Length: 123
Image 1 (cartoon, helix red, strand yellow):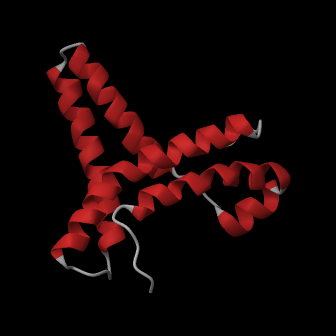
Image 2 (cartoon, helix red, strand yellow):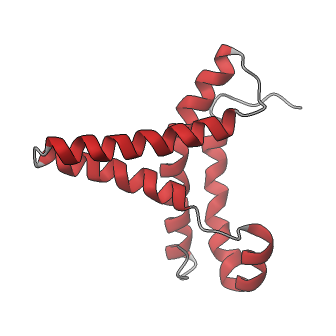
Image 3 (cartoon, rainbow, N blue to C red):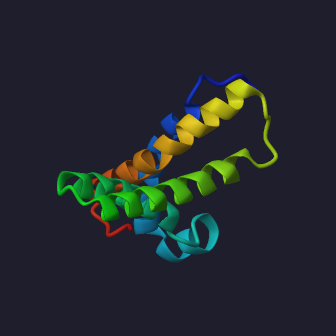
């Protein structure tokens, strides 16, 4: 295994923009072979994070705590999934936690960027 810079998994999300192009050209094969399901977990994480700040702006403690709990649960599940059967060295665990918080945002950004660039409805 070649050494990789810290946070390389976040940088790799940029390649996701080309999934929109693959989907545009081969929608059936894309759903069969590459990505059978949409990244619903990412959508929930990003949407709950956005709604958390909207509810903070409207000073709604109930909604703020609700959206924070949703964000925390889904993000924690994502972190746990990424850490399963991986190195438990402190530097690796801290990298996985930090990048797991960033990946859903980067992934959906590049997904949307690719959908706009290649003019395809790619959710």
